[in-house]
Length: 104
Image (tube, rainbow, N blue to C red):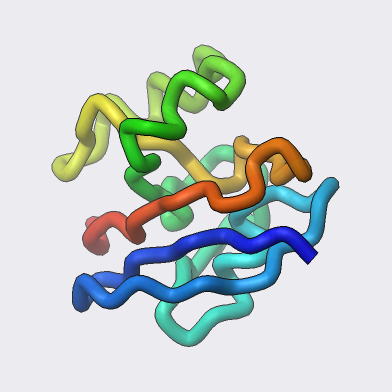
């Protein structure tokens, strides 16, 4: 199974198995150091906010307008901010590195 590299809020990097075809959020919400994902992937709460490693950012599909609008409202928004519910994990993303953003 492909690996996803996750940096938790304490700065510790973990390698976890991720299933292709699922959203990154679906893997992260199962981790004790992961994301809350309160809305379940509906792109309405931003509790799955992550920072994508700059080396991976260009490999992802562009954020849609609803994701960009929600991210722009966050206090901890950065250029590499994404909602993990909007990133479908594929085999091409094996090794993707994300950092869990601070709670809002």
